[in-house]
Length: 325
Length: 294
Image (cartoon, rainbow over all chains, first blue to last red; front, side):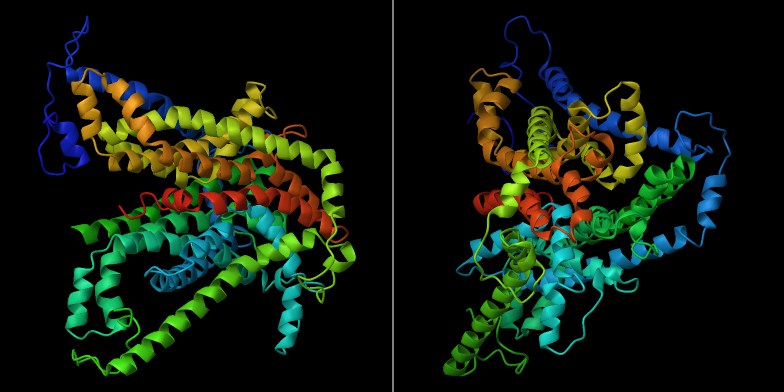
C-alpha cells in the first residue's frame, strides 16, 4: 500500500500528524526535511489569502477604535482631539437615536430569525424525504437568497405600494382595509421583518435540510418501534440531534440579520424614514458617518455594535460546544 | 413506510400496526397535504419575483393598475429604454468587470490556501473567516476610504475589486476548506510516492478533483459581488458605479416610471436566476458548506 497513514479513516489532524516517508522527499538538492518543506509550502500558500484579509481588517479596526476616542467631525484627517470615552458616553446616554436603534435592531433580528427558524425547520421536515419535483423546489428556494437585495427592496415597494400595489388589492378580496405598509411609521419595521422572512427562510430551510441529511436513521426507527408518534420523534429524537446545525444556522443568519442594510436602506432611505421608524444600528451608523460626517461618534457606535455582535456569536457558539462535550 | 410521518398521535402506545387500509388512506392524505403545502410555499417564494419580471413587460399604466394581473400583452418598451440609457448599460458592465476580476483573484489566492488548511490543518483560519463575517462593513468603509484616498484610488476599479475580494476570499476559503477535507488524501499520497512534490500533488491531483467545489464557490462569490450595494455606494464614482447603486438611485423615479425601474431590476436579477436554475445542486452545496460541522 502506498499510504503510510493508518488504515482507519483518518481525521484531518491525524493525517497531518502521521509520520511521512522521508525517502520520497530527498530528491535533487533539497535538503529540507519533509516537515520543513510542508511548513514552508503551507505558509507560502496561506499567507496571500490570510495576509489580504488581515490587512483589510486590522488596519480599519485600529483606525476605527482610534477615531472613536476623538472628536473627529467633517473630515477624518482634520485636526482631531482625543476626548477619551466621551463618544461612548454620548452614545449610551442618547435615548433619541441610539437606544431606539438598538431596540429596533434587536426586535427586527429576533423576530425575523425566530420566524425563519420555525418556518425553515417545518419546511425542512416536509422536504426531508425525497419527492418528485424536489430539484425544482430547491431551485425556487434559491432565488430570493441569491437575488440582489436592492432589487428585492424595489419589488416589494411595488407590491406593497399603498395605493397601486397588488398586496392591498388582494387584501381587499378578503375584506381587509388597505394598509400603509412601508409608508407608515408603525408598520415599517414589521413589514421589513416579513420581507426578511420571505428572503431568508429558504436559506434556513436549505441549511437545516443539509443538517437533516447527515443524521443517522437508527434512533428514529428505534423510537418508531417503541411507538413514539411523529411529534415525539421530532421533539425528542430529531431536534436534539439537529441542535448543532440549528445553532450554527442561528449564528450565520443572526449575524447577517443584525447587519441588514440594503433592503432597509433601499425601501426607507436615509435614517430609516422621516421618523427614523426603521433605523437599525447599521442604518444609524451609516447616516452618522456618511450623511453627518460625525466620524468620532459613528466609530463609537460601530465599536459598540461590533462588540454586541461578537458577544452574541460567542454566546451561541459556547452553547454549540456544550452539546458536543 | 411513507406512512410513518403521517401516523397521527391517536395511538401513541400501540406499536401494533393499524388496519392496513386505513393506514394507506391516511398516508395518501398526508402525502397530498405535503404536496399542497410545498406548492403553496413555492408560489409564495416565486410570485413576488414573477410579479417584478411581469411588471418589467408592462406599460406604466398597467403597472399601477393592480387589476392587471399576469395576463396582458407584453411590451419591450421598458427594456428598450433601460438599455438605451447609458448609465444602466455602463453599470451592468461595471458590475460584471468587478465581479469577474474580484472572483478570479480571490480564487487564485483562496483555493491554494484552503487546500493548505485542509491538508495541514490550521485551526485559527476559521476564526479569521468568522471575524471577516462578523465585523459590520460600515466600520471598515471609513478607514478604507481614508486609506484609498491617500493612495488616490477612490472611485477606481481597483478599490472596488479589493473591497469585494474582502467578501469573496473568506467565502471561498470557507467553502473550499470543507471541500478539500472531504477529498480522499490517498490519491495525493500515491502521487507523491510516485515522485510528485506536495505542491505538484495539489496542482495535478487535488485541484482537478476540486473543480466542482471551486466552480460553486466562484459562482457564489460572483453573485455576492454582483449583489453588493454598500461598498460601491461609498467607494465608486460615476464611471465605476455598479448596478445596485444605479438601481438605488433610480428608486426616486419609482412613482413616475415603475416599468423602467422593474426592467432595470429584472436585468439585475436575470443572471442570478439563471445561476440558480443551472447550478442549483452545486450552489446549495456551497451555501450550506460548513453548516453541518458546527
